[in-house]
Amino acid sequence: MAENKNRDVAASILPLVGGPENVTSVVHCMTRLRLGLADRSLVQDEALKALPDVMGVVEDETYQIVLGPGKVARVTPEFEALVEEGRAAAPAASPAPAPHAATADELAAQGAEMRAARKAKNATPFKLFLRKIANIFVPLIPALIGCGIVAGINGLLINLEWLPSVTPALAAIASGFMSLIAVFVGYNTAKEFGGTPILGGAVAAIIVYAGVANIEAFGQKLSPGQGGVLGALGAAVLAVYVEKWCRKWVPEAVDVLVTPTLTVLISGLVTIFGLMYVAGEVSTGIGTAANWLLDNTGAFAGLVLGGLFLPLVMLGLHQALIPIHTTLIEQQGYTVLLPILAMAGAGQVGCAIAVFKRLKHNASIRKTIKSALPAGFLGVGEPLIYGVSLPLGRPFITACVGGAAGGAFVGLFSMLGDKVGSTAIGPSGWALFPLLDGNHGWGSTALIYGGGLLVGYIVGFVATYFFGFSKQMLVDLNAEAPEATAPVTVPDTPEALTPSAR
Image (tube, rainbow, N blue to C red):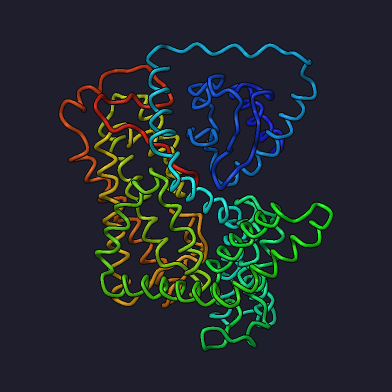
């Protein structure tokens, strides 16, 4: 029955994106089905948003349909199968699907959003570079989550002194991936930058090879793992450029022998006698800076990080934090930044509840909030951001205020000596509880994190309820309106910006 349900979801989406012939690529991340489309104009946005299983849609380099964690991984293979079946069954020259009926206002709004999002915000070299970095690390998140939860279970068993014969096995399961994460980063980096993935993995493997302990560079012995994921990323990028350079001048007859050899040799030597030391210093500096920041300015740092994270997500700049999170997890076993940043989602939830209370006569917005709140509690914030707070304008700012308050709460305890961290990246909200870790045990860590969420909910609610609307906004938005799946856009509000997928 579950398979049939997932197939039904996929079948309901496919015709609304223009059918099988309009789909050029299908992938998914943690929460979104990402589609490459031949003709964007064939997509029926409003009909897609009206589907019960669709939490929202986002226009980016790919067309992204938010389905939520877990569901997207089950729907994607069914969608791929339907696309293949549709292509096989299609006649050689099938007519293009008829465009859906749309008002002039709808088309103008869609066009304005697409132009603003794609041309002004997401096509800059810096944004494209950040997207590449995200594409390297996002595929690793499921393994980080799984191993992180196993590590948490193992720590609980050790503290309770239960099953001592099993805990070494759980430790091996939890730690195996992290001990070789540099290899996976190198593989994905080479793939993303246009090189041969296995060569990127081979060069990055040098970093975790035990034998590097016998090598001296910059006057000191190297240590296995020195440089971590940053060193692996740099080594693989170097390998890509060496490989491309070789392809230009190595004769085809000997290319299969010479190019891989030179790629591994040159990149490997630079990695051993340069990158490992430099990346190691940078990685150590990141860990030292993060700990110093929270130890000395915890409440203020939490205020800033929690308050600015929603705008960072909106602009796609949060992707720059992914390597930092991964480096901290590799060094310390958890990232102290993610629980603070997760408070932004709490502010967003509190804001949405306040909007629901204030707009008692707006069935459209209230329906959107009711459908998006469960996902919001679990840390999936896009439906609330793009369906509620951002189009309304002022509530987006008050949501950030709630996130700042929650971040300050968690940061304050860090300054007092109670560090709150996450053993993996990806989840937030309530979904982060199984991945929590800290320096005073899971119970204390969970209480502080839960307290931060509660502060974020309350402050986000209060700030939005009392300051999120002008009198005229309340009059306009509380007018009786026909039910829809997306809220009415208030004039003179900030334009919705397209984020990069998490």
